[in-house]
Image (tube, one colour):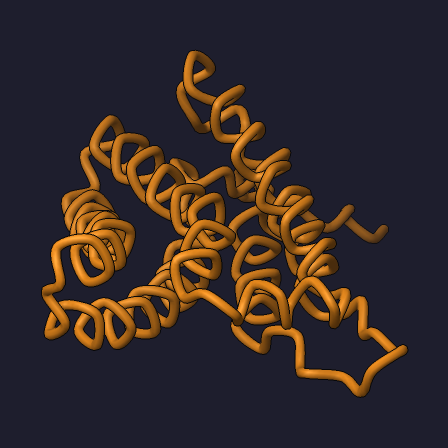
Length: 189
């Protein structure tokens, strides 16, 4: 499996999200499993990314995994639902990781002179930064209109990131392995 395919599959599981389970039960899937797939894909992407920023990306991804493990516990999920700003704070590592990943992939595409990859990952990363900024503006500044825009943009950017991961998974700048040279069949005598 190509690294971006693992990331994309993990993002699909993250998009499914944990369901509200009855009291006393919890469903450890799909968020923690999704984050594990994303981090496995990130490991495969490591040679294609800037090594100076890789540690930060891994740290934020690990933090997002820890938050996803905590959130699958129904009592924690209900506590986070008591105040919308708590839910936003729990999502900061998730969307921060997505934005960092988009930036790193756009830089890798730019180094490979792939303008399509660089521009689409850059635009998606910009959308994710708006998603991160929307809740403080909605809750703190009272700009209620930006809250709904941020929620809609969060869904759109996550879907876009999944699509981009699968579209660009075969590119060498995205960590895909070198294509194997076709082998010549041995001459039969």
